[in-house]
Image (tube, rainbow, N blue to C red; front, top):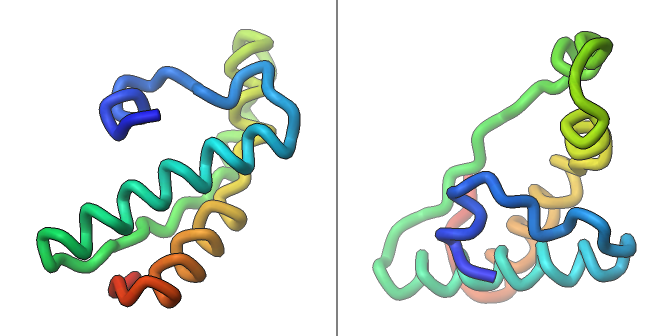
Length: 92
C-alpha cells in the first residue's frame, strides 16, 4: 500500500479480516515513519473525535457506516507512537 492509496480515500482494509487490516495499517505506518526519518520531520497526529459522526450514521450508505464504525483511531495512533519510538521518529 502506498501513501497515495491512503490519500485517495480508497479503503485498503475493506473486506479484510482484522489481522489483515492490522497488517495493512502497520505497513502504512512503517512507510510514514520511514519517510519522516528520511526527511527529518516529526509526525503529527490530528486528534479526531468521531462521536458526532457515528451518531449521524443513520441515512448514510452501509459501506460508509461500516467503514467509519470499524475505523480504530486509537489503534492507528498507538501503532504510530510505538513504531516511532522504536525507530527514532518524533511523534506528536
